[in-house]
Image (cartoon, rainbow, N blue to C red):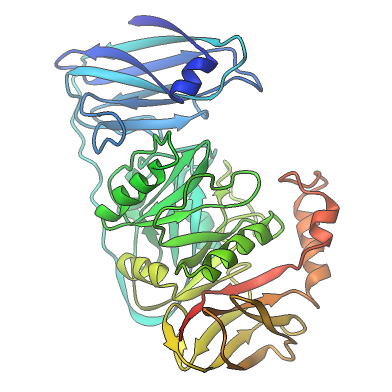
Length: 466
């Protein structure tokens, strides 16, 4: 066993928010145990991870062995198993590195104490789980949540519990985007099925913004330190055939990097009351500037250690609904990129399908348009159609099967929203009840909610040329 003490300072944090502690691993080592201890406080939070000898400086494409952020103060990695968030497997001899994230460092710095224990007991070498490729034939609307977490990062609940929550919600697909790690695939690769497809995902989590990577099996290096590193992130993702989406661009964790080439934007995260009107406004402005970005939603649900009842603050709030010609991960990713769908408040929320000149959401049309917005389950609320200049029509939805129509020359794009009117008081009451007497979350005030429309569903745009 080795004992190591380091003193980290704000100067270290400014120089590089990632701090490395090197140690040597000899041949035949089959397990490494690391324990960290420091005086954790409101102004002192240090994240924890591990790299093996194959890792390089940023951006590395190999050598990642795990990340637990601030959720753990110890871990092990072995040939046959590992702590959640960490990767088991081959244990190459050489110089390994404990990786610290200097998230918060007090003015006088912090002493951090480590013990590192190496073991050579005989163990099997377990391969990573094989990815499955489930397919369900049949075109239709499929429902999913594109942002949630397990105990492989900072949630308390297991993958098994999250799987049960997805079944309870009646979802077709789920993207489990644990922070800065791909260890959750130990469970989700072999359990993906034609009943519930698990979309490969990872949340790149930094102090200046979060982004989800979809459809990539490899770990994507999250150690971004400069504004231009966002473009490196996009390159790393796209070289591997994946999609990149910036997350919750609103208080309290906005996207503060330069905007890279993104495929999607998480326009709606958690309850609509969680400042999502700010995300939507930023999305509207990006569309108005001429960018083509697909809108997606995700609950950012952190699975607790027990199965929660259905309600406004659990999994699939909101739900992303995609039109697929067949049900598979490839089809889901293609529809996400194309914007072939809409976001709604829950798995049973209002249906909202926009067509323009007979073309579905995500496509491009030219000339004058004739548009139809097919809405179900929102009687008494309002249908709003918008283009780059703002609101074009705002009309009451007079029945539970409603078609709103528009003809004209919208600028740049056309998209639709369902805004709560008749349902507003009910939605606010359900939200308040879900808080169980707690004060408003997310630094909200009553006035913040009172002054904002409540969106129940929003479509992807149809783009307009000419």
